[in-house]
Image (cartoon, rainbow, N blue to C red; front, side, top):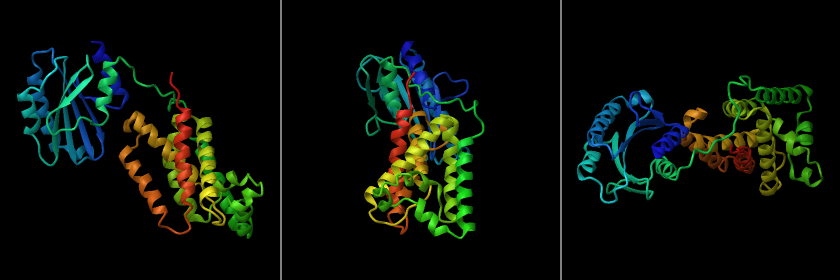
Length: 336
């Protein structure tokens, strides 16, 4: 019973939802795949019948997978008991009965006593981290608790809004004063300026933008990642994350971009927000952050990759901010 309680906590903590009216059936959407899990208690005589019922359920879900904005279904059955040996032949056969291009069934056997997991021949033994959750439950470990701010405590992302207002005001000043080039030269990030001891440039540069399009593109990502990060972390920690990520981006720019002129923009800090939310989504699941891990990972890889192909883009600032955001956010996460 203790194993099942720990496993339930592990699954729900990872964002798995229980299927209505089913004690040990779970689901999670990780676009483009809808994952279904059926936990079978080998100590109960009716587990084979339950597995067949689950196979029928998976087939029905395959027919309506578009409603979850997914393209295919992966249905995992896990037989849990302490009897070592080969998988039951009849159960292995059912694992392939509903196989086609949109539905793939997997069958595992797991022993809580030994922590050993075996799969049907040719099938994976790793799936969405469920194998780790099974072993964690068998070891009696409770889920890692991330101490974050309750989103209900703060509905207005004050710091995110203030950052946008400052950036917009500074852009207006540059455009209306007629001294745009002088302002950017005096407060933008440059290797020459940093070597001269003008360290304030590490921070002033992240609030300056070259024009409306530059500000608009950064503001979209600031809104998308900043609002979520601030609501989860709280204003104080969010500002630490944002500013330190921007600082890391500036350091990378100075170290690796060479004498590339003046660098400006909030993108280094914003890439830090992307890195932080990517890490949080991996730890807590898409339902917690409202973001899809695979999509975010693809976005980060694509954006950084294309950054090397575009002229005038300080891509090392992006890389530094991204890595800095992951590092800072790791430090901000604490266990109870």
